[in-house]
Amino acid sequence: KQEVTQIPAALSVPEGENLVLNCSFTDSAIYNLQWFRQDPGKGLTSLLLIQSSQREQTSGRLNASLDKSSGRSTLYIAASQPGDSATYLCVCEQFYFGTGTSLTVIP
Amino acid sequence: DTGVSQDPRHKITKRGQNVTFRCDPISEHNRLYWYRQTLGQGPEFLTYFQNEAQLEKSRLLSDRFSAERPKGSFSTLEIQRTEQGDSAMYLCASSVIATGESEQFFGPGTRLTVL
View (cartoon, rainbow over the protein chains, first blue to last red):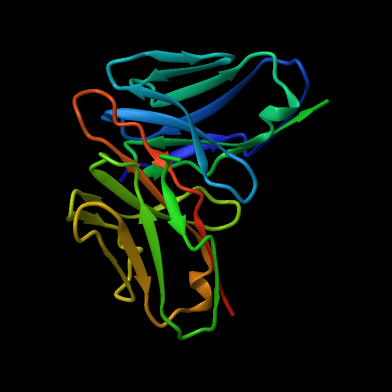
């Protein structure tokens, strides 16, 4: 069974800082990995989807990478803004979610 | 709006009552997923459909839970004899399975409170 871990569970940074969120998974035979953000009490908003044949995807200030051999994905957020404050979740193969990283960007 | 919709958004019920939730996926999406999420946790997979066929069910889905997608469009999730431990956010997502992309899109969720 795939196990997905996200460290740290919470992160607080000043506005403008670049940051990296981590997602680790135990079974490297995945066909995709997706990153979401979730605002309190809300559903999930898709950020980036990486197929197994890809190494990274970019959207605006976000860049997600995938290293299957090491069982890791990272989400890089450039020039963080207070509006980026949310919980960030990764999911492997659409079924296996991590517990999330709660990000707070301080103005 | 062409996103995933869920109804109701909130449901308060007494222990022992039955509840039913509805999910309308994005049109043309052939996969539909149900998840449960409790406070501070990531979503836990419950079940998914490809068209009208229920292809997988988590062991979390006890006998009190049943899901249907009779015409391959909307889906319902029913919980019978609700328990306080069923209190959670129930999320629905959909995707289209084709070569390459299989991005999931989520609805706003149904928050269930069992008193």
